[in-house]
Length: 153
Image (cartoon, rainbow, N blue to C red; front, side, top):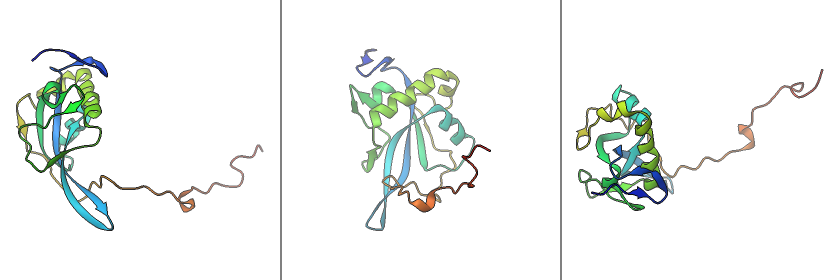
């Protein structure tokens, strides 16, 4: 494997570390909720929180390198993922961003070493991650301010 830089991420190489999480998420269409399994890069701060026991939609965490999951700009599925696993949106860009978090926190790289899988997490789907949720803002969402808030007294 060569240590070449990525065209849109010249500060990264194929040897840079990152963690890929396999998560249970949901999509909602016409009122129907469908379960999907996605692979997504996990930033170092969130990895540390997950390993401290916060509830997470991740079933497993996989230590890997950027070269294993992104070739050029094309995402590559990790070997441990099943056939039903899909890539998250903007996978390559998110992989680059996550890899940078491990560059700035090298101590996080030992939590899930390259080539290992961590499944001892507080897996929970109680709070469902809806991937295509739409946030519709209405005038009722506005905070009402006191009449004198913007007056000079």
